[in-house]
Image 1: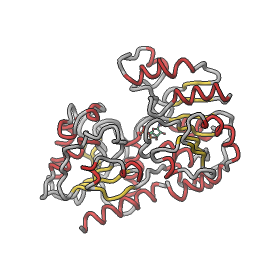
Image 2: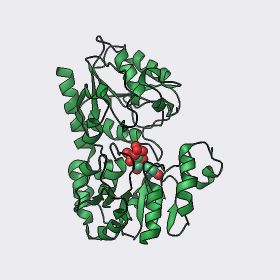
Image 3: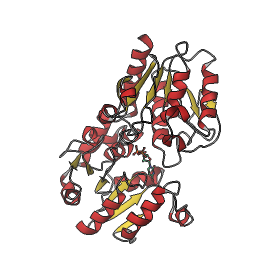
Image 4: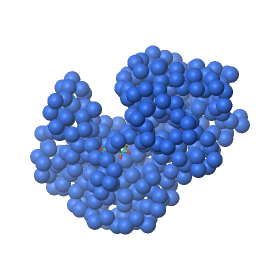
Length: 366
Ligand code: UDP
């Protein structure tokens, strides 16, 4: 399993891909699958065996075509390739965006088959994988049907299906104690234009509901850190120009990045988790976490949201951003237990691991 050169597994707070790898690996081991984990040295997930490449890297490679991936990534991939050369790996499951495919292609026909999990929405990056030829032994899976359907043709030619994301919070979610609900809405996630915190803040003032924003602004995790931020960073600019003018500390608050129990309490105590999306959310970990914590989702019906949320039962979706504010007033009618039961049925680590084990089986026998 190649988790990449970025953040530890599990991450401290924010970290979508690393959270998923941390959730998946123990479940695969419980199914009797031996997993060698390639990750950064600070990772704390118990390892039967691990390829420790080096410290935390950058997200730079997202800007580059797969065959020009830069910086620390090739060094990481080289360490993984050296480990694969030992010859006892039956399949490589890669989570490293475009650069990971370079590595899978480098395995050639002699190496084990490679499964590449897409974690990003590629509609705006059609060229990122444009020249990928992949080879017959590489397969690609999505984290939602929507994401895979709209992936570049070069990748769709290798598609093997989709497996939704999962959360450990969904285990026994239906038996969790009811958290005391407050009136606020929460937006949990990276603060940027695609996630739409500016729209959420504007709606909070216009429709009169309290809003808590949680998550990093670029690499900055707290108001103190943001005070010394690089103003060239597009997320920092988005914050200053589009979000900060609405943040009055009363109606709309930003609490920085939250982790662990603090994150769970914040989400469980909310009337709704708001997803005012401008991008096509590919997998939505925060969406399934909200359901598991008994918090219905109010959001824009795009990306994976219509696959994860049943309108009228576990959330309220609309394609009209103006209508989102009105939905915030209607969401009180939804039943928390329905949200938790849905998470316990569809988004547990065991369900996700069974989905991947099925893909592995199909790839190894074919
Ligand atoms: N997250 C967190 N603290 C924060 C903001 C986000 O722990 O302050 C976590 C969140 O709970 C989720 C992950 O980071 O597990 C974000 O993954 P998601 O798929 O929702 O979004 P992505 O950033 O991958 O687009």
